[in-house]
Length: 141
Length: 128
Image (cartoon, rainbow over all chains, first blue to last red; front, side):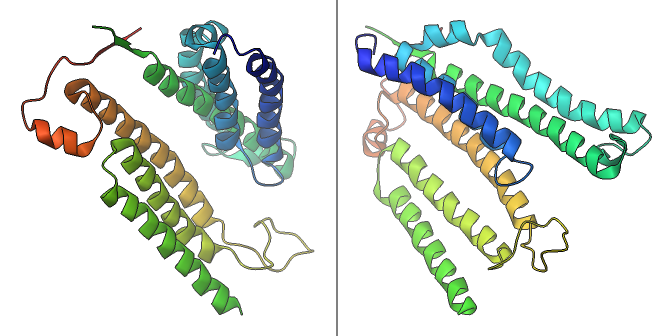
């Protein structure tokens, strides 16, 4: 796709808004439909879009393999970390009520970080699956 | 009227399920079979989510303004089912990739023609 100027320019414009929409879906998840799963898939889709237009090597330079693999583990760590912080603060595992100065505030804070963890892991897994499939190339002959 | 809406959802569910099942049976292309399985899965999502939605009900957050709430449990179950669906789809695509490497085709009849002695080595792929 290297010769299609229109596609390349439009893609670069759209990727910004795709990432912005992913963040909107992520943070609007508190009040309406949305959340980490959906936002993670949208964020990964923007990178996959970049890979389709600019080629896999370019995407792997922008979002390298070590970052993707770190994201997969980091998200789970954030999720479990919220649970452990609840334990340290004197509640049960994944007890949100003890995270803030009052219960509702603690709930908001807990859900926020748990959803961040889900976003990071889902985006990482989606990109890893895409990289693994797309990097299998046919040998001529 | 509400009972009628319920039965409409069952009708749509069965229609989507049969659409997916027909694609799985009638199409020889393995990728198209996976698409059919995906459509079939969607019908199961609908079957679970539709009874959980109450017309006029809101998200289950207790408030003075609202008296009717939708049941969140089916949505959570189906959220898990969607994630599992993505994982099984990735597994299915990986199997299709391997079948193509072994047989050189993803058409079911052409694979059956080759029988148990695939024309190995026609297509080789490498991980870069």
